[in-house]
Amino acid sequence: MIKARVTVTLKNGVLDPQGKAIGGALSTLGFSGVGSVRQGKVFDLELDGSDKAKAEDELKAMCEKLLANTVIEDYTVSVT
Amino acid sequence: MIKARVTVTLKNGVLDPQGKAIGGALSTLGFSGVGSVRQGKVFDLELDGSDKAKAEDELKAMCEKLLANTVIEDYTVSVT
Image 1 (cartoon, rainbow over the protein chains, first blue to last red):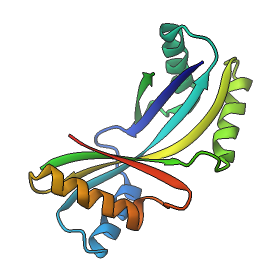
Image 2: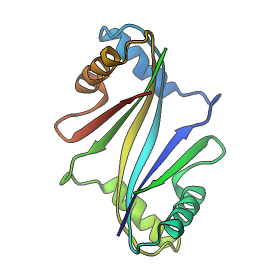
Image 3: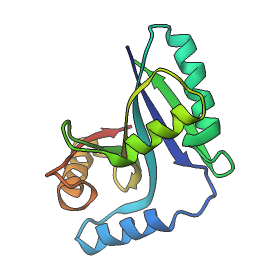
């Protein structure tokens, strides 16, 4: 079994109102010196098999088809 | 300026219906051999200053207070 982590983040230049709200909330809570905050998603998957290269290809296909909106999001895949 | 990434994931044993739905959707799309899928959150922050140890402490405090629900979620902080 292969464990993998897929991280999906907004591309640079794409507005992130959710991240901005979190940054505002952190300031309100007294955390000073917080610059930009951007929120993304992480997926922890378990895949059958033991071929890591094949798993990585499959994970990239999953990102392109479902996990990420590639118009506005980047993704990284790490297989462990 | 310090860049940091905070990853928040559900604790083991906490049900993740969202992850289950994603797993089901992947199967429907033809990806076979997908076991468990669990979704988490990732925050990319920029902090003023250059003291990495202090930044890490501050980030942990942010997680405890706002970014994570420590009853059901774990968090990891990585400062780069």
